[in-house]
Image (cartoon, rainbow over all chains, first blue to last red; front, side, top):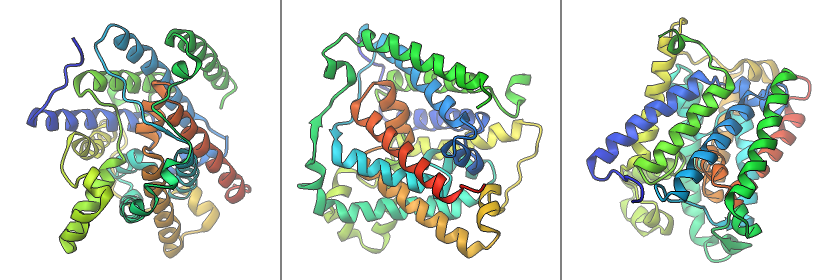
Amino acid sequence: MGPLEITGSPRLLLGLVTGILFGFILQKAQVTKYDKIVAFFALKDLTVLKVMMGAILSGMVGVYFLYSIGLVNLHIKPTLLGANILGGLIFGVGMLLLGFCPGTCVAAVGEGRLDGLFRGILGILIGAALYSEVYPFIQNNFLKLGDYGKLTVPTLLDANPWVVIVPVVAILGGSLVWLDRKGL
Amino acid sequence: MNWLRKEEWPWWQAGLLLGLLNIAVFYTANYYLSASTTFSRAAGMLVQVVAPAHVAANAYWQQVKPILDWQFMLVIGIPMGAFLAARLSHKPVKFTTELPQTWVGRFGTNSARRWLGGLLGGIFVGFGARLADGCTSGHALSGGLQLAVSSWIFLAAMMLSGMVMARFIFRSA
């Protein structure tokens, strides 16, 4: 069986339609605003965290179910400790200063906030270009630091995925509802 | 449909829909929701205009080619969807260069300062996402749901540094 995997030019149209739906939901979730992003990092309003975790948990159940019946493939990014940690740290600082991540930045532009266009898109493009320039110098040393390959929590624990998914969904899902009731 | 005209959906509805959309992406595209690679491709296209040989010789742009692909189209679709969502809400969409409230509350309305902070932030976001090999979409959302170790490490690192910076910068706000 396997995934449908639309190819050729319909694939480009599929990307566009997927993007329109993605942008629509992000806007309706109200996570495309600088103030919401800062409030999340300041732990004053956890909407961003709740939406993100809600998406992770529902997607987890669905994707692993379809994976178990052979309808989708997993696409695991390799664990590169040095790059994942340093990249994440840099990204977090940037996201706080800019107030957007790449996806919400372009969404903000569609919503009319040109702050995302001038500083955001321009800055992210410069950052991406800088990385291409730096890449040749780090690809054979820093990027190899703590390289554990394509690792998931279930493979790490040598456990059936559902042994991980059920408690994760129960605990994180319960925490989200609890946070929500606390008014965060 | 009143629901489509709502200004804000509850977090669990938005979260569930994002999860369902991602599941559909795994099936229809044999891929996952993601965004930041497109900025590398787009940057390659722009640099190509002035220095085509340089881009062709670059080891990263040889892997992440400056071409239009599924994800590139997705990133073009995002603002269209956001515009549609905002347009359907009762408040009119107004294109504005106004600075974000929280920023103004902390740093004032000086536009040079926002240029500096925002541009620097953007550079960090762009560079960090490439170094970590993903952003809030590709790593956090899509890698997170696959229980990828790399993605949960990225998520933890990003939240940690963002929170420390928030304490540092917006303590009074």
